[in-house]
View (cartoon, rainbow, N blue to C red):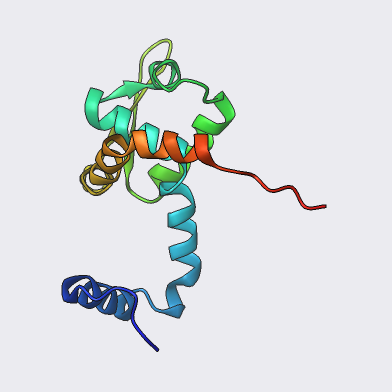
Length: 138
């Protein structure tokens, strides 16, 4: 079978990845990719990474369009996987703040080049969408 990617560094990296993330880890891989790869989780990681520790309501105000239910779900998943920490303060009313952990900062560092790639190619994406000829089946 011919390899599509010929850059040796990339091929080696994927070989190494496949040795660690083998079929025994399929459920974990799928679960983590599902939530760290969804737009809401990435917006949460971005907000906490750029603006620092935030309360739930501040996060919800910061992320345009996210529902309370989705924010709660994403925060729980990110906390479960060690990407976000949750601090509860014994005050009246109770105060809860969220922050990125070192693992979460690592994720932000990894997805930043993706955001940069999107920003650098936004014109091409717009042009492609404008020129797309959708063919409706008969």
